[in-house]
Structures are given as structure tokens and as C-alpha cells.
Image 1 (spheres, rainbow, N blue to C red):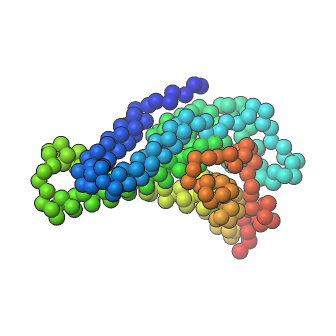
Image 2: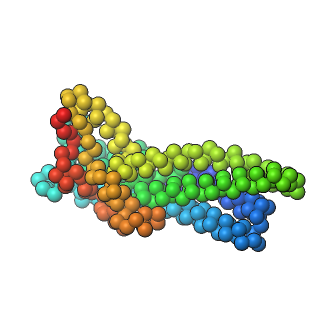
Image 3: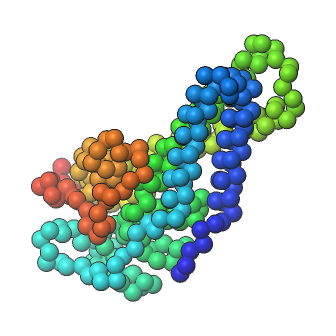
Length: 284
């Protein structure tokens, strides 16, 4: 199915980015510090960089395929290098997608919106009109990171400008300036809060090498393990630093850049079996 890249939520996001950028740079910074001054120009350049990175990574997250299962994929249960073969909850058979008519590799799931299976699927995001999966997860993560940084920066500038106006009893600003700043503030406060929570959530998931789907599956698996006196451990959790490296890349310097050449095929992932650590459960 051919995917449409433009949707109403995407238009809303791009419109919000444009409005907040214009208001922050050409209203708040210009009226407060002046774009011709060194402080004003420096703040405008930094904020422009953050917004540019947010916009670029947002576009890539929209356009990049989240990861499709190769038509030739077939699980090999005798492959010693693949210690994990996920099975159905009922019956114990290898996971097979009836809608796509092929087997599913570990961590792959079928998206009802995209109408296909996605490698290492995290969730379907209406704001990018795309799934967040193996091939675009880091891009999505970096987009949220730059968006939070942009919102916090804009909020600090807005608050600083408002405090300066109050202190100086500045009555020179016209009604359009005040209105645009109020609208920007009304947008920034909930947006910053929501994006910060989202970033915190995905930092947690990344540190544990989980997807959103795997987190919810893990809650159930943990409950079932505790019923029989075992301790559940997520099989793909190989340690906080190694988890970060597997998702964000081998170099710390590249973690904040939208590169993803390190991610591999998405068919097989490193597990705690590779570290000779019991995976699904350990006896108390």
C-alpha cells in the first residue's frame, strides 16, 4: 500500500513549528535583544539550529520506511546463532502473520494502520503518519530530543522577554506582539511538558532496550513469571550502555545526529543469551 506523506496532523505540526519559530526570533528576540546585537544574533542562531534539526529529523521520520520484513525471510530454528525464536502465546507455534502471509522475525509486529508488518515496531505515530520501527526509531528519538531542546529554549526566551518588559514597564510593544507571545506561551507550556514526558519515556525504553509494545508485553510476562516464582528479564536488555549503543550508535558523538548506519538488518538482535545470562526467567 502506497503511503501518503502529508496528513492533517503533519500540517498542524509544521504550522506550529513555523509560528513558534517566527514568534521567538522575529518578535521575542528582536523586540527584547535586537537581532542586530551580538546577544540577539547568537540566540537567534542557536535557536535556528535547534529548529532546523527538529524540522529535518521530523521530515526524515515521516519519509523513512520503519523497516519491512524481507520476502525471503524464513526462521531457522536450528540456527545456533539465533537463540531466540518468538512464539505465539497460544499453541507455541512460530509467529506467522496471516494478513501479510509470512513469518515474523523477533520484535516484529503487524500495524493495523499501515497494514503491514514492521521490524522492531515501537508504535504507530499519527503525528508522523508513519510507524516508529527499526529503521527510523533513532531518527524519531533525535527529533523528540531536538524538539524538547527547542521548546525549552523558546520558553526561556519568552519568559526572559516578559520579565524584562515588566521590569522596564515597556509599553512600546503593539497588540500583535502581545497576542503572538500569549499564543506562543499557550502552545509552548503543554507542548514542552508533553514532549519532555515522551522523551523521558523513550530514554527509559532505550536504556532497557525495549519498545513500547515490548514494555506492555513485559508487564504481563513479569506477572506470569511471578505467579510461578520466577523473575522475568527482558531478553534484549544487555546493559544500559550497550543498549544505548545498539540504538543510538557506537560513538557518543553521533548520538545526537540523525545517522543510523549501525542498526543492521533488524532480523536478529543481540540478546542476553549472547552474554551467557539467562533470558526469560531466573529462579529465585
